[in-house]
Length: 217
Length: 217
Image 1: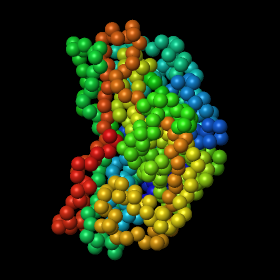
Image 2 (image 1 turned 90 degrees about the vertical axis):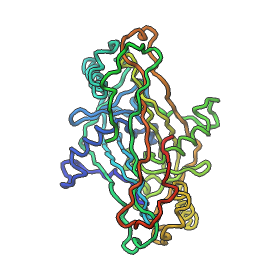
Image 3 (image 1 turned 135 degrees about the vertical axis):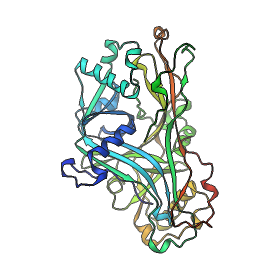
Image 4 (image 1 turned 180 degrees about the horizontal axis):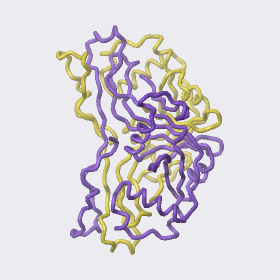
């Protein structure tokens, strides 16, 4: 039962040339899965909030209410952000070597709050357009008070690492003779058929950005 | 773009009678999704480790290497554990009301390390059997050194809360007239066809616990 521990603190600049740690791998995991977890300090104790992140170049962003504890306590303080894609259960021939397949990125740092009104608007547009290209211009425009009510934090992808486990179980040499099924039970995440709400009239065409989308790949 | 913030600290005993906070809801989310994130303190800073949890009655457990930082730093110290099932993207008529559907449980507390050898063995059995009923007795038995090398932490489900968002977008009354597709792009997680490893001979029957399994439901 191997642990999942991607939190080795390694500066990217000091990383060895290993595929799992290269910046392209880190970016690909961040780009494949918007759901992330952010840990921050709250009254001297660690707290976690799940939220959605998006990446632009060498930074990740997440947003929330300006009143959210995770944003009030997280900005300008140490945080840790993790994205983990759960790819499967690994069934070995001993309990000890059971494991999980996954792709994980962990980033440590001190997020900055984005203050500039136009920059915030642009970031929110990028967030929406990143999911749904072309949607921004279809929407009711953002109101100033909505931008003011939104906190956006940015974190540079500098103190970051990826950890990946994939493939079949790794058993002890002498255990391969055991007469038990061993292998991987893969897990995938997918988008199902979109559900229009009751106020979307029949003449509203389903946007192309809702068709054949994937997540976690 | 509504935030996801399940970290309201509320003692279960003080919870209002709301479905989303009742203990059955909390248990059902924990039982539906083994992947969790644990935040712990590391040199005065928050760190996150993704790992697999399992529940027994009113406690959650997770295991790892006795040398793992998350276990060394987490035991007897404040941690925060979150399980979040990502159920979909919610497309509203304004960017501001875009959201995510999800089911989330957050637990605060101080985990205890399980010391007793027999208790650890029983817990590891429960963990394996919880996923794969009947598998434990098919496996090469655990070795004492494997049990010694495994750390198991337990956390009582007392300071815990659930947060759930489901259903269609909530738009401003005046925005429903916008001529744009609005609704939910659902996300599901599923097990795919099991892959036996190359050492599993053709005469080894695929166990029934690998058939028709679900996750995240």
